Structure formats: structure tokens, C-alpha cells
Length: 200
Ligand code: CUA
Image 1 (cartoon, protein in one colour):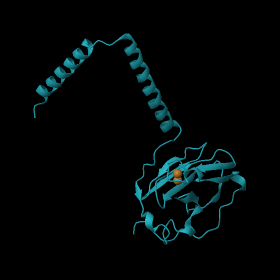
Image 2: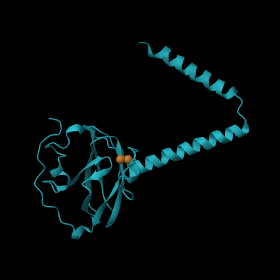
Image 3: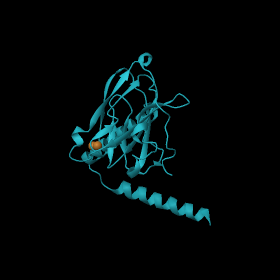
Image 4: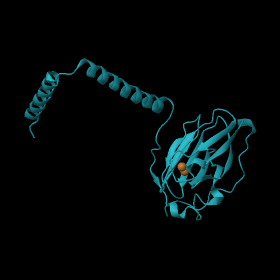
């Protein structure tokens, strides 16, 4: 294909467009509001960019699927495997299930100032999870595993809130996590996660 004529055609189009744009009469007041709205858009895009690159606020990018209907069976999210576990590399993995209207397990203890990887699944409908003062804010979509790594800055009680409307009990769907000083926290003694892959 000939590139040159195509390029000329597009350049001509662009020139025509700019001439037409200049010919439009824009009122002074209108111009002012256009500028304000562009500045507002710029501000929001700026906030999103800063959050993404400097505060680690990102959508979970890993598309990992799971069968929500069989969570309770003997697989990764079976009841015995839920809660805090330390894997063989020393990483702390927390598995939690969201369901109308609670997060399970109801209560966990985790260390402060330590990277924690949360793996969330929904057993029924769309839920969300938000933990103030951390970068934890994600949707929990049925059929997918939402994985987020976060760190709690200091010890205390942190609320865990559902932030997607999931039914009449949505307002009451919250629990809390006890964050303990790093030195005082001991890993729970548990059998390793059994049941193999989620998608067999
Ligand atoms: Cu779960 Cu709202």
C-alpha cells in the first residue's frame, strides 16, 4: 500500500478540521467553562496517575477464575484453608470469602508493617472490600479471585467494609481485622493448604 498519498490525505483532513474549529465562534464565557472542565479532568487524571504510580492503588490485574459454586468443597477456599497462612517462602497469604452479608473468617489477626497478600472470592454476588488507611479497595466478582498485597501501617483495629451494593444487608456487611505489632505476632499453626488447583 502507498503510504505517501494516505499521509497527505490525513494531513489535509487535519488542516480542514483545525480551520473549521477556528471558524467556530466560542463565547468568552463558554471558553472559560471549557477551560475549567478541562482542568478538572486533568486534576482527576493526575490524582489517578499519582495513586497508581506512587501509592500502589491498582486494579487487580491477575485474571484468575474460580468456580464460586464449589468454594466449600475441598479446594483452596474450603473452610479449613481460610484465614492467615504462611507459605513455604515465608510470605503471608490471607484467604477470605465474601458472602451475603459477611466476610469469612469473621476475625483475623495480622502483623503490622508486613506485606500481606489477600486473596478474596465471592460465594454469591458482587461484593467489594475496602479497608481505610490501606490501598485495599477492590471488587470481589463472583467467578474470579481478587488478589491484593497490602501493608498495615500501624497496629490497631481496622474496619473491613463492603463497598458494592449487594442486597438489603449491604449496610451491615463489615467486619474488622486486628493488626498486631510485628514483634508480638505469631504465625498460626495450620496444616498446609490442601485440595490442589481451583480449576480442576
Ligand atoms: Cu457485600 Cu455490599
